Image 1 (tube, one colour):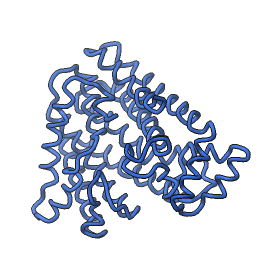
Image 2: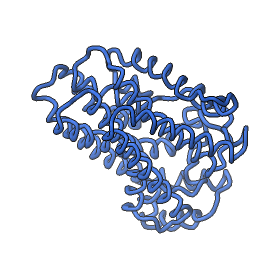
Image 3: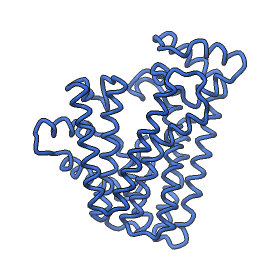
Length: 330
């Protein structure tokens, strides 16, 4: 399921098409080589979840009419932060590919990939500054939160003693913070009242938490064709997500799983570890935790209902988290 399918919002595809054009313009610099590298992942496509959240949040405030240029610029700035972080992530992970194409670090080397990521963050900051000091400060703070979340994940790589609190703090920084910012930027650029902007911020954070738990469960239950990589890949990289952490606490099975983890896994060990996780209730309990965040997201939208020009739109937004998690139970 992609974000447009989950949101089912009238006009969002048209808005995202406009975002796409602006993204290509924003990744063009004076140096042709840097422009080629910086636009590499833009050309590869993607779900554009974060720009969609900007647009959807703005529409929730202003109705289903046209999306302003400020909203589109905010959507582009948020996506540039996301893209810049992906360039850096691929260097740290030594990833050979991203979105079905050769990664920038594999094609051009780590130094070029890092500089391209820095360029995208700089362009995001430039666009944010044009939208006012609040948006500029918000994006700067979010970049710091992304770094903190990523450091939290690296700190616990291959660590079987990682706690659930450490996991939640990490995904709060590396995923939920930017989605919270996306929703907040949508509110700010649409001219919403302050209590509405704050409600959208809470909504975005909770949806981000639900989304990351959904993604982490997918890594274990989906097929390699759906994932574009072998199932259980997070464990291979030493990232022990919520289902794995909970499976390690199950008497008997947990000891066997813990004995496998803590080191890089070859394919047979990966498949055995995945089977152990799937033999427990860890998947269903993780989905239940994701639903708790989805409920919080829906509840956060209540302040928007009183004076909303698009109540059906808010209903759709409120259901997004559960629609994603329902997919795991199909």
